[in-house]
Image 1 (tube, rainbow, N blue to C red):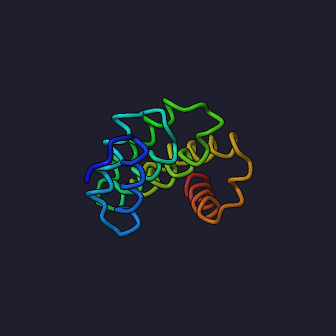
Image 2 (cartoon, rainbow, N blue to C red; image 1 turned 90 degrees about the vertical axis):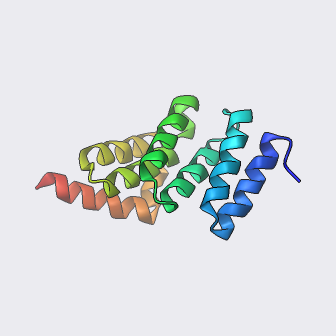
Length: 129
């Protein structure tokens, strides 16, 4: 049985993602976003995560850039934060720090997240030297 709505594909993608089936999660999220590209920024973040865990960080990065283009800035702090992490893993330290600083500007509370603190400190130390 196949879903008939974007929401159905998003739920199916969640099931696959939670089971660790990145390939099918990507297919389901992508189909849902084809049907409703402006539905939820969270779906883009989950799709990016599925790409990353499937060994495709460049597609994960592009997915987050796409989300940032579509959604209002006030909804994008988590996407910027995740993008900062992904760029860090690709050795793009200056761009990674810019993304983390954008996330912080949009939502100062993201500074309380452990992963944000870790990569922000690493990047500041790397770039200040």
